[in-house]
Length: 167
Image 1 (tube, helix red, strand yellow):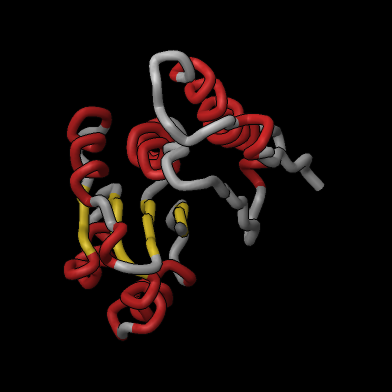
Image 2 (tube, rainbow, N blue to C red; image 1 turned 90 degrees about the vertical axis):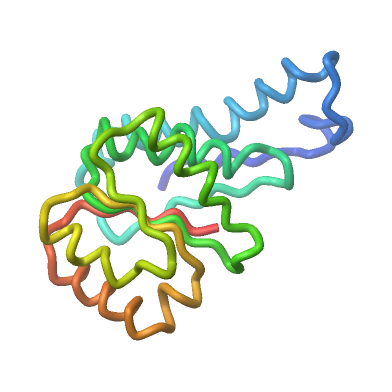
C-alpha cells in the first residue's frame, strides 16, 4: 500500500488569507500536497500496470485543486501519458469550470476534443475516430443519464486508455 500524505491545516496554513508574506508558503503547500504526490504516483514503476484503483486528492477550498487539474494534471495525462480520454466530473454544475480547462487545453494541448456535459453523446464518436477527448460533466450526467451509461459501456468494452478526475 502506498504512503498517504495528509495536510495539517493548523501547521501548514495559519490563515486562509493570501498575502505577499505567505505566497511562497502557499506555493510550497500546493507543490507538496498536489503536484508532488501526483507525479510520484505516475513515476512509480507499478503505476503503468495499475488497474481498478482510485487515487484520491483532497484539499480545502482555495488550495488549487481545480487549477492543478486544468493546468497540470489533464495536459500531462494527454501529452505525456497519452491517455485517450479524460473525464472531469463534479457534483453539481455550479462548480464546473469549463473555461479554465478550455484555456489550459488551448495553451498546452493540440488536436484535443473538449466536450461538455451536453455533448456527452459525441465522446464515443471522438474516441472511435482516435481523437483524444476531455469531457467536463456532472456526476449525475455521467452516472444516471442514458448517454452517460452508453459511454460507460463503451469504455468498459474498449481498449482506450482512460482517466477519471472526480471532485
